[in-house]
Length: 600
Ligand code: FEO
Ligand code: CA
Ligand code: CA
Ligand code: CA
Image (cartoon, rainbow, N blue to C red; front, side, top):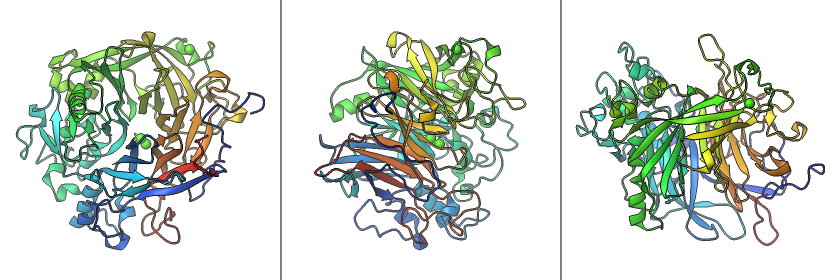
C-alpha cells in the first residue's frame, strides 16, 4: 500500500478476492494451465483416461488420485525441465465411480484404489516463453503404489512389532499410504509423511489395545472394505500390518530403480511431512508434525554428517542419515500469565503469544529415554512415548519447514475445533483459542540459531481468520489491508524470503474457497498477507512449489462437498462442461511480452 511503502519483492500482485467459483482464480496479469490430472498416462501406450472405463491396470500407470505434496527437482539451471514428484494422499471412491456402493465395493474398485494411492514421479517441461509445465514420458517416470516394496530402516527395522506372515523379517513393506505433505532433502530425495493410516485397518474393535486406540485405529469394518480383498488390512488376521504404516518414507526420484525407504527413527504417528535442514557441523535435523488435534511436534538430530554433491554415492550415504540419531518431542511454555490466555485469541498484555520451549529426548538408537518403554516401543508407539514425557498438545501440526535464510522454523497449526470442549485441554499460549476453527502459524527460533539446540524461543506470527475479527493477528500488520485466511496447511518460501501458505479449511471461513497466500516476514511489510490464488469449490490447496517464474499447486479433492458424488457432481473442474472433477496440478505464471516475468 502507499502508506506502508512499496510491495516487497516477490509479492507485487493485486490479491485475488475471496470467492466460491468453480475455477482456479489468479491475479490480473497471470496465466494458468493444468499440468497433470488424475488418470493422465505416465507411460507410453497407456490409454487416455476414461472415467467410465477405469481399471486397476491402467491406474497403476496413470497419475493417482488426490495429489497433495508436490516437488519439482530441476534438471537444468533455467527450470525448463524437472522431475515432478507428487503424493496421492487418499481415494474418494464415491467421486471415482458412478453408483459406488460403500457397503459392497467391487474387487476391481478396490484394486483401482490401491493403484491410485502412493506417489507419481514424472518429468515436466516448459518453454522459455510459458510457465505451462507439461508431463513427459521419461526414464524417471515411476508410479509407487500399494504394491511397491519399501525397505524398513532404522532401529525398529526387524522388530517383532513389524513382523507379518508375508514378511517374517519385518523389513519389507508393500506400499505407502495416506501420504500427505513432504519435503525435498538437501541431497535431492523426497520425504513423504504417512498420515491417516488408521482408517485402512479393520477389526480393531474389542481388542482393547491402547496402542491401537491412541492412533484412532478403532471399529470393525473400514469405510473402504479393503479387508475383504487382502487380509493385511484385517487386524484379526494380520495384527502387525498397521505398525508398518505411519512412517516417514524417502524416495530417490533420480534413480527409478531405487528401493524406497521407511525411516523408523523418525517415529510412528500421523506424519504430515518431514523437512530436513543441515546444522553447521554437517549433521542433519528433521522436523515433523503429527497432524491431529492435540498432537505433538517432533525433531530428529542425526549422528552422521551430510556428504555434499549430487552423486548417486552421496545420495546413498545421505539416505542413511535419518536412520541413526536422536528423536525429540517439543514442550512449549508461554511467557504470559495463564489468566491472560482467555481462549478468545485476545492478545495478552505483553502483546504477543510467545515464550520458550525445549526438545525432550525420546530415544536414540536402541536406547529409550521414556520410562517403561523400550526404544522399539518408542519408535512404533511414539504418541504414547510423547504422552509420558509431557509434550505440548498442539492444534493439528501440519507442515513445518525451516526458512532457508533466517533459520526460523515455520509450522502451520491448522485448527482444532475441539480445544476447550468438555474433557479436552483448554487454551494455552501457543494454542490460544478454544474451538479454534482457523488455526495459527508458529515461528520457532532454535537457541542461538543452532539447528542442534535443545531449547528454543517461539511466537505466533499469524492467528488466522477473518481480519475483521478483533482476535486475529497478522504479525502486527494493519488488518484492514490483509486477506482473510483459515486453516493453514502447507508452507513454502520464495527466493526473496517471503512465506507462502496454502490452506485446507473445508469452507470454514464463510464457505469460501481455499487458496495460496504470500506474506513478507521482515520489515514494515511483515504480516501483509495477500491471497495469490484460489482453487475450485470443495478443493484444498496443497503442495505449493514457489519457483522464480512459475508457481505450481496441487488442487486436491475438487468438488468434494457434502451431498456431492460422481452421481451428483458440483464441480466440473478442470475439464469443464459436464465432466467429473479431477484432482490436478496447476501451474501459474506471470505474462511477459518477451519471456516470463518473475512471480510477483
Ligand atoms: Fe493430510 Fe494434515 O493434511
Ligand atoms: Ca506472551
Ligand atoms: Ca496437509
Ligand atoms: Ca490437510
